Image (cartoon, rainbow, N blue to C red; front, top):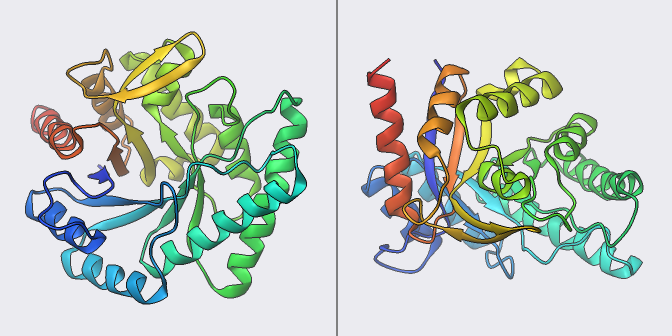
Length: 279
């Protein structure tokens, strides 16, 4: 049985202090296992501060990942904007690697009314260049394209898995709340098992032993995701997701993006442990 680790998307709300290091120590204090560094608007660490973050994570045993800025668009209509997005993602990955993050999560971009197959080729080209740079420079961090919750955004489950299968050092970020919002479905035990099975079939059985997952409540409409919600305020069936992960023998990291982040992350971990003991 592989183990799932649970963490917050960013510095927990109750953290005494405002730094990433404060967040790492607080995560450990309240009994959680992981933290995703959120470079939402900018890459706010530098090489020196990233080294301090790495040390804090090593001292506490907290697993780190990072999320690149949200404004990236590798399929922007202007080539210069594509190159700017590529450079931002590349820098985010380098700094995240210096901080000890295992992977850098990102949204690749938008269709911009383009043909999905052509958009796939454009996105793959830019990511392949970043990956080659990382390999030349000795950065082992994995690229983690995230499944989208919006119909206008590149990143269906199939596109995300196909990207990862064509890159040399990638791990998908499977956002189950996004999958639910995108489809209006994928909220039952059997549907969750089907998604996990699709990942395994696409990337190999070993891929589900170290998954990177996002989970939260979600508000959505006919065009997909609108905003994240707490579990209490949403219809997301997190208990059946955890049951499906356990029954699939899945391991890895579950990052909770709830507005009430540490409270809902603790609910996830508590439910997971209860399900394990009831097996």
